[in-house]
Image 1: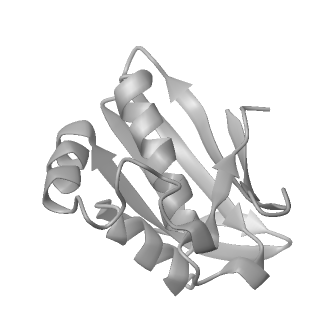
Image 2 (image 1 turned 180 degrees about the vertical axis):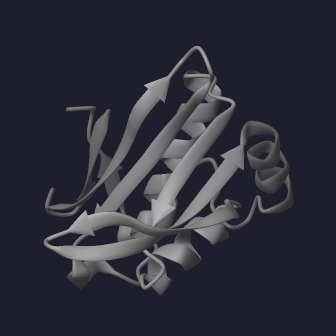
Length: 143
């Protein structure tokens, strides 16, 4: 399942979020995300992932979500940890990308942790995901 992230002001597509490797029997899925470099640091991805997590846990009723992050990507690590994901492991030489062998950090988030996180961080990102008129964006339907 893929979603686009677009700004409301000009409908520019600035990023994507993904739920993949969905396993409804086990109640788990993996998340993926990407954002254009020009839009980093504006809270777009935090907001988009918050919406994705709500959908995965509250609508699809997943029990667990996982994320696989490049250990060199400190911004991505900060983003995922800010949402309550827990570091579960370091996998050495897991991927070969463009001929480069790469490590990965594996993160997990359980629904009960997400529920606790939302209660303790209500002001971080509210239920109204378009409350900031300066940075309004919309989440396109699954493609």
